[in-house]
Amino acid sequence: MAVESAPQLDMGQDRIVDVTCPAGMLASGGGGQITTGDNQLPKPQILSSQPIGNLATPTTWEVHAWSSVPSALWPLYAFVMCVPAG
Image 1 (cartoon, one colour):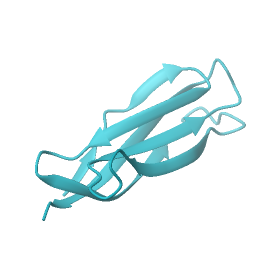
Image 2 (image 1 turned 45 degrees about the vertical axis):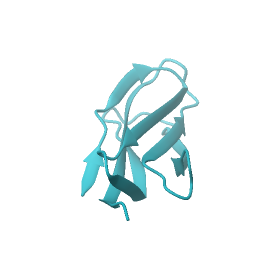
Image 3 (image 1 turned 60 degrees about the vertical axis):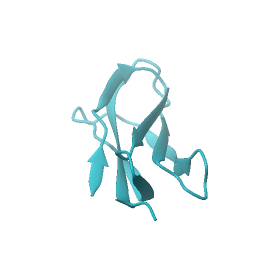
Image 4 (image 1 turned 30 degrees about the horizontal axis):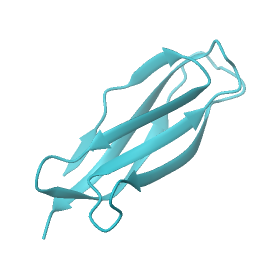
């Protein structure tokens, strides 16, 4: 089962988005996506994409991204692949 965050569309350079599996499920993987429609240069970059919390039984995936343009408006999506716990 895949779970996706709502896009975080704010101005700013540094952004972190978390997405959590439903109850009773664990995060088995995940990732993030940045989309820019205005040919913005330089493009924002994903700095990290990883499980957070108890790493033996992670339920949340976190994506951290950064843009060198302070006034840039860019959406960051995070997604997590969830599997049944146990």
